[in-house]
Image 1 (cartoon, one colour):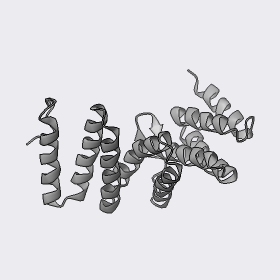
Image 2 (tube, rainbow, N blue to C red):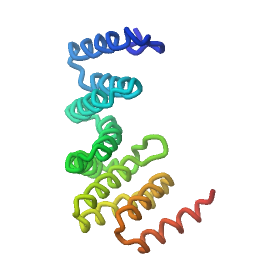
Image 3 (tube, one colour):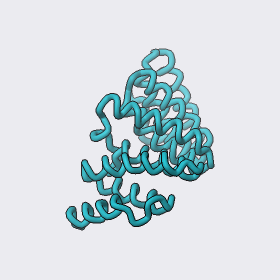
Image 4 (cartoon, helix red, strand yellow):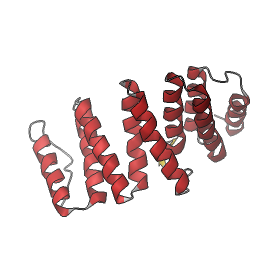
Length: 192
């Protein structure tokens, strides 16, 4: 049985997805329920209901965390932190990203979870540091951004390097620093 049909018509799509959500809840399978919530978040995002999308992303995050599914939790945090920062909920973004950063470090997973070309660990360090900087916590922002940049350099994650460099520049912390120089050198070594 396919839980997610390829074609969902505009009017029945919500009912279909609600049925899938109810089924996953009845089965009490948190890992599957987290996947259902993530798909519902995407479904509502595509339909333009961003507040409902964020609600399902947060449900996915909590359920994945409860199930011990670090990968699902971390990947969902990318969407959550993006939405939280863009809506000005900086403290919440810091709290979510810190939980992910700490979990990935504790479980030694900071080098192996990617969303496309993005290192999720570097991404979360970027959102956390960026948010802290906007809140005026420059020293802490600098330290977290540095961790994300070091990780991106270590695993040669080009998108992570680019994003970390943008966050540094955007925040104005260490504009011509050693880390920016190292990032540029790494990008040059890796080529086009």
